[in-house]
Image (tube, rainbow over all chains, first blue to last red):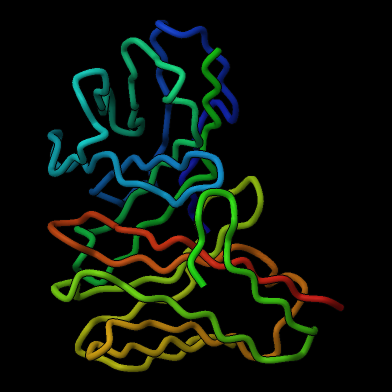
Length: 116
Length: 111
């Protein structure tokens, strides 16, 4: 069964450094998402992306965050200057159509980001 | 019950029992709901979904019930197996495509 794949599985970064998290969505999917999950808390929406532009973003997704689809397969999340509170699991997801169109979002296994 | 911080509601069952996991959602305008299973160290895994024009949907060993009047969603797992042990999240679609997750319930299945 097709999967969303994320790399790396664990990223350790010094505070203030830039980090790029990478995702390969399912190949026929058109909608892409980033979520994060702080340890012990629920999964929170960050951003959705369609047709090479952001569709929606949450309050968490401030100017330090950006997303890009640099080629036909990868979808990346960049954090420009990391803070301690950015430490979390970051999940990428993709779906065939937009979320309220009866097509569920499928998630990768996440990247654990640890900020020192 | 409610969960705060690291404390998740936990449901402990014996292998072979039926499990019922409940979820209260917040947005009366939400029209699409999904149950996800999350095992330790993995991402949320799709289990079953339901649209708001339905009140019940069945899958393999799982049934989702939706009560829009009281904004309540439940997941029933028949003949629970040790491999079903995980945290279960309900999620609702609000807005264009944003998934809003509930706090999760930990299911522990004893052999």
